[in-house]
Image (cartoon, rainbow, N blue to C red; front, side, top):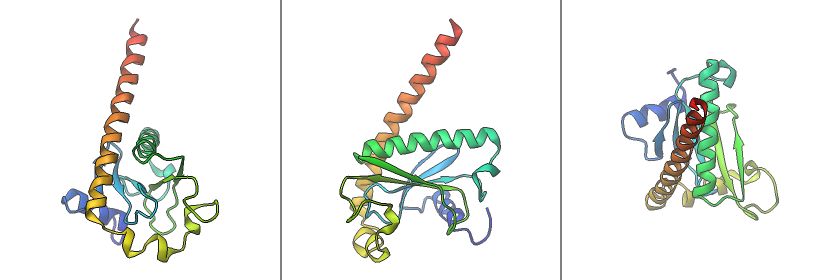
Amino acid sequence: MTNACLICDRIQLIQENKNPYFVRELNTGYVVLADSQYFEGYTLFLSKHHVTELHQLAPAEKLAFLEEMSLVQEACAKAFHADKMNIELLGNGDAHVHWHLFPRHNGDTAQAGPVWWTPKEIMYGDDVIKDMPRLDRLKAALGAALDDVLTARASEHEMVKSKQLH
């Protein structure tokens, strides 16, 4: 971890069991709900390793990180009944590889477009930040969907392995 990295700070809070947004640890990263839930189910997938670019991860870890992100976005879509998922790897503000996963719903913005067109005072308003009962409900829904997706993925791997042996 590096000094002055907000993502590393979030991970440290997870490791200290002090991050109220934490949902699940996977092999390559941490699943957390975002601070703002204006777009209900807005989820982050944080790389366990502090790198600023995806290509800086070792090849096997990069592929595993991408696969896990795909599973997290599938669970996010399922848990929050998304009509469409928006997935972004930005890093201009927090230079630590992490995915933004937005479950989108038809008509969730005044005009069709990226979530970032939503004014910050609305997207990060007091009414959508740290509502603990809502946060607990969202974490439970995402955790249950992750269980389903990860179980299905493990079954798929077992079927492939079984076919390879025969």
